[in-house]
Amino acid sequence: MVSFDEKLRRQLQKVFVCCGDVRRFRTDPLPPDIMERLIKTACLSPSVGLSQPWRFVVVEDKERRRAVTEDFAACNTNALLSDFGERAARYAALKLSGLEDAPGHLALFADKACETGHGLGRVTMPEASEYSVVAAICSMWLAARAENIGLGWVSILNPTRIREILDVPESWRLISYLCVGTPRQSPMSRGSKGLSGNIAEDGEFTSRR
Image (cartoon, rainbow, N blue to C red; front, side):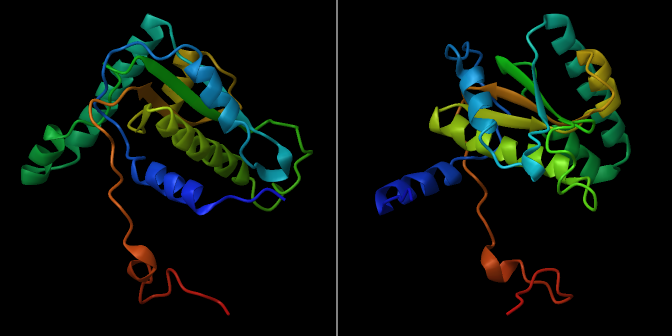
């Protein structure tokens, strides 16, 4: 059985602390083969029924990137129109993506038609396919920070439109569109409220012993 020492645990904790979402990137090109390495690491993640439903699309074409950025702008404008007054002003001031600066764009999908694993574990919880892709994203996020690379999750997008832009099968459901690149400054996580901060009076989080 593989075991890990305290030094490695401390180093891993440091990676966790520095895993914040990145919206401001340097425009420097990505290191050679970094995308391939990150995807290989993501594929080591656990998945429901060993189905490995994740599908990766590295977006390099300038026209496709431009179309994705335009979709973000349209969706962001619609979101802004739903707010009013001071809240709208605060929203408008936020930088919510690094699409224009990040040297790397990566879309991750869950293949709902994936036959690998013969549906094991997905009969009662078919959404477990999407959860498996999220687990892969988390693995990739940690691997990226260990490589001094930052990721930025762009969610203000129209999934149907993104699928059309990238010309992928209809059975692929968009889970995440990631900006990939070197952060302008070290991304720090906001931190956790801890266990006690997540226990709600209505039993949102509790223990069973």
